[in-house]
Length: 196
Image (tube, rainbow, N blue to C red; front, side, top):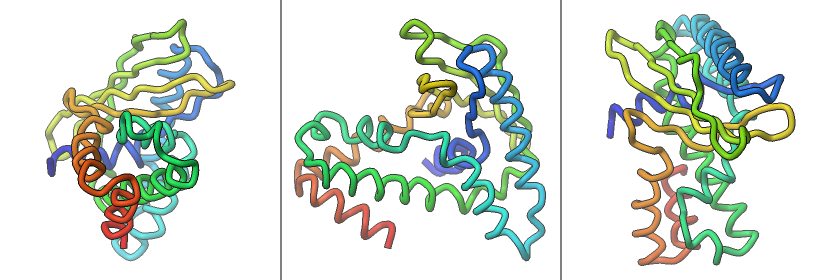
């Protein structure tokens, strides 16, 4: 789990997806460019400005992730029974959890190498794309797959798999246990407490 959390720092901070065009191949090209840009931001860290650099990397990455869709997938079937207010609260708390959990480790990856495979997996008539990458940090290669959907002229990430383990699936089992015991409001409360 520690390795999963550590590598997902890249999912939230290092590999944002900003697509100027809606072509899957252009998505791959843009992913390479964005990885370089975020790694460039992280390279500015020198110990005294780490928080500032981390925030800059987060601010760059966050707009290109669909946290509402990620939350819906992580919650699973109970999402349909949640009220709009509960959905909003869950999304905000899950987003905060992901950012706080992973942003602290982002700076460890300022020297990472990112290899993006040139052939994306295209689903749903080109509206969804999986871009496969290998991230080498501290000498260890880790496979990460980014699942994105087309929204206008860009793609937004809604799931990340690290070595085949889906981010939303990992959280779903935890969330469903809490929902069974305490309901949706119980999950919101638990996330708020963790984010405290």
